[in-house]
Every structure is written in C-alpha cells, then in structure tokens.
Length: 446
Image (cartoon, rainbow, N blue to C red; front, side, top):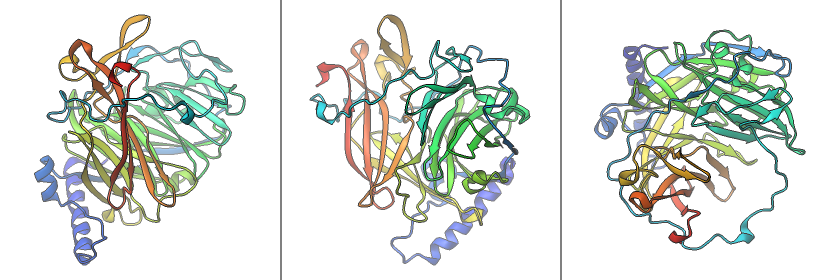
C-alpha cells in the first residue's frame, strides 16, 4: 500500500489532472462539479487522500462444495463496531416525517415462501450454527436460483424455490480455504454478500483484522451457483487504520466498498474504495482505488444496482451518508485506464425532514436502547450510520435511490425507535427527495 506521503502526492497529482480536465470544459454547464482540495480543506479540514494499490493476492477456488471447512468454528466475542460522531445539533429534534396512519394492507405483497435463515441453532448439510458476535451483522442476497444468508462469520446457501439449505452453515473463511494469509486463517466477520445481477455472480467480502496488515477478503463466484468455483482476492489496508464496517455495492464499472476507518477508538473518516470488477469477473489481477475522507464524514454507503436496466453509460456510483436534517451525496467515477482521471464529486447536501438518530440525546447516546420482548437485553440501533443497502434502480423514466436509517421518537425514558426511509430521484442531475417517511410500530405516534 502507498505510504501516507506518497498517497498525498498521488492525490495532488490526481486532483491536478481533474482540475485541468475541468477547466477544459469550464463552459459545459452539464459537466460534473469536482471539489478542489481547497474546498475540501474548507469544508472538512483536509482534502481526500487518493490511493491506487494492487491486490495483495488472488487465486481460484475450484469448488466451494469441496472446500476444506475450517475447524476453528465461529467462536464467541463482542464485535468491535466503532462509534461515528453524530452530526451537530441532531440529537434532540422532533421527527418531521413520522407516519400518522397505518400503511394500507393492500400494498403489502403476499408471502410466497417462508424458511429459517442462518440463526442460533440453525442446522444445514454442514452442521449447526451458533450466533457468535454482537452485533450479528445479519445479511442476505437473492440470486437467480439461490438465496445466500450470512451472519457475520458464517453463511449458508439455500434453494430459492424450496427454501431448503443446500450448503452450510460454514465459517465464512471457508471461501478462502487454501488461499493463505489472514483471509484463510482469520474468520473475523463483518461479512457482506451481494448478487451482481448484471453478471449473474455472487460477491462475498469479510475483513481480516486479527493480524496485520489489515485485509479485505473478496470472493466473486464464477457462475450463478454459489456452491461452485470462485475467484478470490485480498486487498491491503496497512497496519495503522482499522477498516471497520465494510459495506459493498455492485456497479457496471466496479465493486464499490466503503469503510469507517479508526485509529484505535478514534474515528479517522470514511474510506471509499472501488475494485476492478471486470478483472475480478475474469479471475485476473485487480487493483483498487480509494478516496479517504476526513473525520467529518462516516457511515457512507455505496449504491447497489437492482433491476435489469443498467444506469446510464459512464454513470458514477452514488454514495450517501446523513448530516443534520440532510443527506450527503457523493459521485465516484473510476477510470481504470488512467487512474489520475478518477473523480470524487461532492458532497452535495439534500435537505430532508427533521430527525434525531435512535438512542441519541437524553434517551441514550451510546447506540443501545432498542427493547425486545421477553428479555431486558437491548439491541444496538447502529443509528450513527445509514442502513445497508443503498438500492439503485433505473426505471427508464427516472433513476431512483432508496435509503434508510434508525431514528428516535419521543424523549428520555419514553423514547421509541423508527425507521426513516427515503426515495431519491435523479441523483445524477438534481437529486430530489421524492418520498420520505418514518415508520414505527408504536401506534401512539400515528
């Protein structure tokens, strides 16, 4: 990985190239607006640090069905989930978008199939799973014929038609059996699974952070069968900044992954990265390009493509986090042929109705206040960040992003929680909040 000094030099070189290109099109009003280093310095204290690094290692797993399952199991531990500073003035506000009536039942689709996913005591062809981490980071994705359920450090593959498990549960690092290094030996979790609908491929990632250097382990299936062959990669993030809470999105030009970087317990800002999707689909050597933001920005999500229609040609990936009564939108355009031409545009602030993060202010503040029936054990709201995924769909007549996060209703010991969701239209032109609402099961707020 590039050193901090070399990375800054690379960033300045890239920014210079961006500005030269921008001035050449200064009269094109439709050209994307790229923030200068001076503007970033004014807004966030320092410019984003741009790095281009090769993979640490890659190879091929011939068959997941025949992979050696690690014997160290899942373990049990409290998982590090570093807290992100909340936006100023955001912790003691009334919610401006809370639902006042129940949703019409006619809008709820009929359930066609129910089955148990990976959870405590779940049993499949490869054994029985036990919940091993708090928070558990439950996750899942739907493919052409299968559903993959992943819970932090373990996963299973299900037949989508019958709901029967066809593989698993196994430790997530089974995907890196024989790979070598931290990706094989460490089963550290924060796992994410997505389905690349455009290519008909599965993508699974988890980090290796028990040893250094810190790695992100990424596997791309060779077909739509998650139990078959996989192309495997590891990407290096050095030994100083801890790459926490990785979240991924699929886009035509890259797999985008974002991190919350920590130096010990001190938040250092979001890291926005792109992996060379074309190379990874082919099983070839791949690089990553990253923009490290300042500590003013955290909990950023990349957009993940839904539906059969791709975004417009050369469309950037859209990334979002939240501020005080606002959403922040970035546009990440990656250029694999000439990395110095890659750009990060934004953030653009999109005003939304007032809200406060769940468990914040007088009713909590540490993130854990969500009650559950039958126990006094409370749940972590993870309300200092957006909720995975940031779903993108091109409807032909318009582009749409759907985002959500946890908010609070009420105050003090009377605090309840809800989910604020948004539909943002035309993110590539003039981002507009087309719909927004806060849903809560508590009827006193309707």
